[in-house]
Image 1 (spheres, one colour):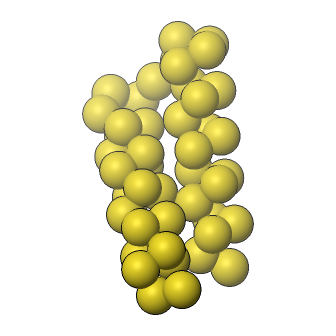
Image 2: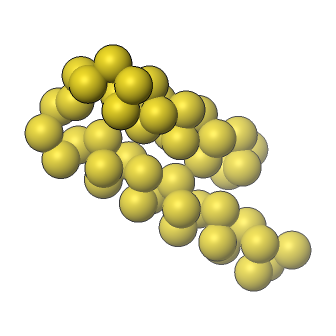
Length: 45
């Protein structure tokens, strides 16, 4: 579940970078959240 959410957030971030359509720092905040979720998933196993 968390891994799926993280993947979706990363995809949305990449789409934002490709289309140059960003909502200020919101997209980058989503990226940071996605990375944290992935790290927690890896640490917990």
